[in-house]
Amino acid sequence: MSSPQSNTVFAGFSLDSADLSTEAVNTVRATLGISGVVALIVGILITFWPKDSAVVLTVILGIYLIIAGLAYAGLGIFSKGISGGARALDIILGVLFVIGGVLAVSNPTESAVVVGIFLGILIGILWIVEGVVALVQSSDSPSRGWAIFFGILSIIAGIVLLFSPLYVVVLWWIVGIGLIVLGIMQIVRAFTFGRGAKAATA
Image (cartoon, rainbow, N blue to C red):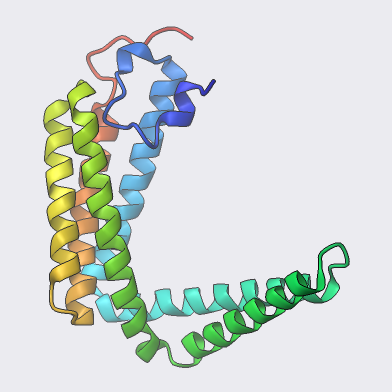
């Protein structure tokens, strides 16, 4: 049986602070606050320095791919407890990761274009899903107005991001603005969650 803490990320709007312990309320508030601050900071960086942010993120992604590729290749070469086919697949995957990482690091500006389009599509889909989840949870939410507002805003932002012209700067700008707005909302939720309701004792 899952504890209240284990469901906080997936049921942020349907949680009633009156049913939670003080520790659980603080966990929810910390989760909302941290995610909101991170989204806000990243949103500001992307909005005001889209090109630099795209290049930096692309380089970070490239370094990650190289490290992950070396790990997969090493697993395939040195692991003795798996089949030859699985080892070969690990090595192939590792080589592809390393090649992708090297290309991203050596051509960060050009790679940022591809990364920007991919992230735009991915984030657009995630925002739509998150918005639908928030609307579904709104019927059981003590803060129904916030849930509906967040859900509608998230769905609109996701649709705009998916169907906007695929100009990378525009994509990054839309992502940045969306992260700023959603980050602020998360921070507000972190401060308001549990206020006015006495948390249940553990």
